[in-house]
Length: 218
Image (cartoon, rainbow, N blue to C red; front, side, top):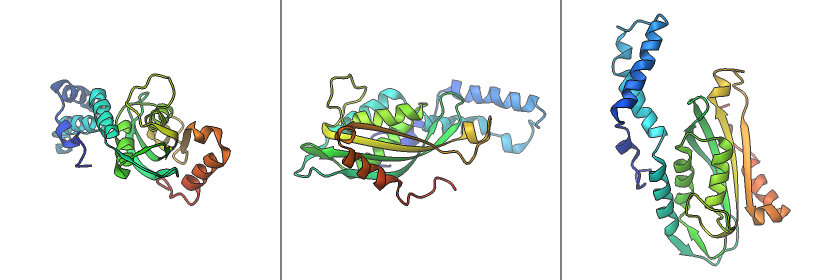
């Protein structure tokens, strides 16, 4: 990730309100009976604020990074599926601000150009660094790798014959609270273009990303 235009470590120095927010959270913890003199809590507010700053990147920075990645394209004669599967990335649930662990597989069928292979992993990393629904993350990835229709796009996309995205998520808002269903995994998929209109292409993608897939935290 050190080749990203966005350097995560450069964003881990949040503005004072972020640290102040965690100071308030610590006060609530102490009010519940925990010892505020416990040395383990020293510096916790700042560390927590830095951690959140790495999980929540500025949306303008994400859009700018995606646009720059998509501008670097290479001509190709290939019309076969380009697939980057089982990318692990982390995000936040916008409903509870609790972490989500994702395994993301993305694919597209080139029309005239391809992007660098590593860009597919970087794309999943970038778009996951937002408090966003899994359903929206899946759709955004598919749109960026297709962008052939007339719908407005939040990000500059890659013109392709079709795109497909399969996401499996472990949501701590389900696993660690509420229903406490630690074994549950949420799967979402989005299909564009040829993946939507040609069942054989769609099945090829689904088989490739689900057959013998590694466990997402067994």
